[in-house]
Amino acid sequence: MSTIPFLTIDWNSVEKIEYKGETGIAIWQTIQFNGLRVRIVEYSEGYLADHWCKKGHIVHCLEGAFVSELSTGEKINLAKGETYIVSDELSSHRSVSKNGVKLLIIDGDFLK
Image (cartoon, rainbow, N blue to C red):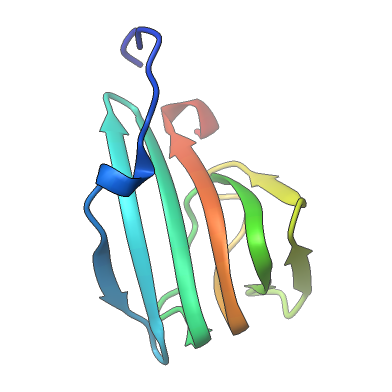
């Protein structure tokens, strides 16, 4: 991972990119460093991810709530102020948002 100097991020100036889910949309604002990605992600009402993810993440819920479905059938609820952490290849998961949610998601080489 690269050395990152003291940095502030004005999320209002970071481009928003829309991704379609199986249903609904996800809007990503991404800051990319060498080996580290920091994102604000918003899932619309009725969002269902279009794939199962095996990548590791630190996910902190900023607003709203959502469910992480695991391929094992387990469902993990995450609400405002809560965080989950998982390393790469330790679960297959996908996000479901009934009413919309705003997340801070951090991932990168340190989760391998």
